[in-house]
Length: 179
Image (cartoon, rainbow, N blue to C red; front, side, top):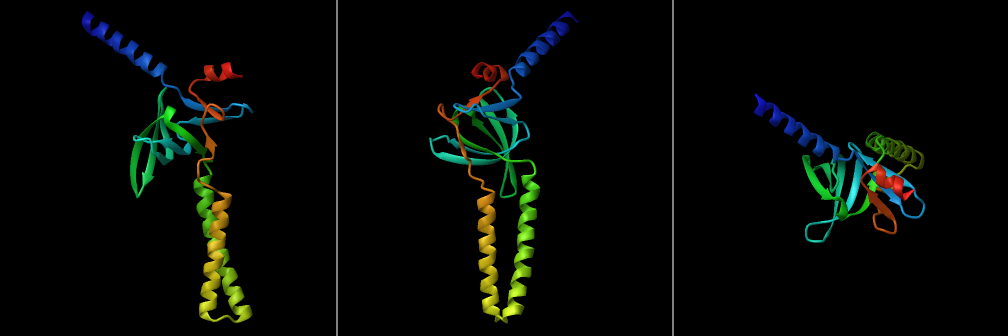
């Protein structure tokens, strides 16, 4: 019984020490303006990082865990979910997405498609276009609205991580020292 209690106590201390070292968020601080970006568990992000062989790689997904050295990202590519580990020191750029992005962007695409259809049919009837002209007008209008949506809602990581731009900090204590 004594052995069981000492083992249980040891496991509790070990568990406490491991969980005490796991931070709950990654804070990026701009070196000159002191602006901050907080990345927490469950945040939608797009990272650019140095891969295993030094190549530039991208990953887009939801943050599933943050440790003192790594960040774990749950991504969905080709209808297959995977969890990938990226070291914080390998991060080179980041884009944090709004939670509303996953609902607003598809709704915007559907609204643009409906608007393009209405506009194309209106122009076709008003100017009495033949079928080829109507199809080309619809394709051109769809391409233009798609490019406009991509311009308004970019996906490329825009905040470069380096010592002169955005500096990654793990704990709040490090953030307080910088300010």
